[in-house]
Each structure stands twice: as C-alpha cells, then as structure tokens.
Amino acid sequence: MVSDVDLTLEAYADTIVPGVRRWPGDLAVAGVSDTPGAVEAGALELMRWDATGIHGGLDDLAGLADAHASRHAEERGLELEPGVPAFVALPFEGRTALVAQLTSPGHPEREFWILLSLFANMAYDSAAHTHTADAIRAGHPGLLAMGITPPDPDGLWRFERSGYGRELARTHPGTTADGSPA
Image (cartoon, rainbow, N blue to C red; front, top):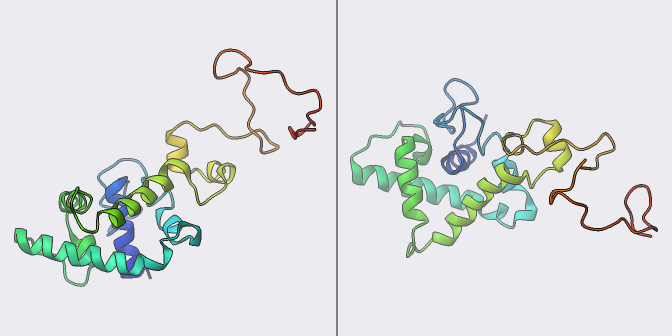
C-alpha cells in the first residue's frame, strides 16, 4: 500500500514531468503523456535518497502541498474525491496551476517547491540516484528518451568518432588499458 505522502510526492513529480499511467486507476500519475515520466524514472526514490538533503522534510512538504491543494480547490469551487490526498485529487490542470503559483516569484515557500521540482527533473534527466549503466540496462525512460547509448560490455563508454569530428588529444603513452593515467 502506498502512503498518502508518497502519492502526493509522486503526483507533484508527475506534474513536473508528466507520464503515462502505470496501471488503470493510478491516482498519482495523471496520464497526460503517452510515455513514462518522472515517477517511472524514480523521482520518489531520488527524493527519498539521503544524499539529496531533502529526504527528512518530505512528509512536511507533502502535507503543505495537500494543504495548498485544498485551498486551491476551495477557492475555485472544485470538489475533491474524499479519501484521496488533496494534491492527488486535483485534476492535472489544477495541479499545474498550483505548482505555477507555488514556484512563482514572491511565494514565501518558492525555494522548497523549486527544489522539489528540480529533483523530479533530475530523476528523469539524469537518473542521479542510479548508476547510469544500470539505469540504461533497466530501461530508464529519461535516458532512453534522450538517446543515451549503453556502455560497452566492460561498462565503459567509447565512441567510434569524436564528438567534435576530430580527436582532441592523443592518449598519454602511460595510460593503462582501462583508461587510468600512469
């Protein structure tokens, strides 16, 4: 069973990088995209990773997001589904409008919401919480969408031709076979 906090955090991440629903009735992912988004890319895992520095405050952020969503819905006369966290219950358009408000200049909590948004993007764009080769092998949606190629069988990336169309420097004669400097 997924906690209300996790549902809210996933719904927030899905608002930043929308994805396809993972299953029928998926509450957190609104399903406004035909391809996987931040949630499938591991946004919740990245946010909960202790290296982020935000993991300890996520319960509070989810509570704030739900409180803001309740006010947002009330101000607009929207009825939210009972028993579902308020942010999750907002229609996608309501989620995006609320996130735009929370991240706008002058909002007193702006830095928190921008930080949470950055982690949703980071999960999709770089799989920062996973070794890149492992993420590619697992079919990470963001890395695949960007066309990141898998490494060679030894786990290293090599390219047949240089990115600038020419070799930029010769390999140092003391460089070992695994690429380490002498």
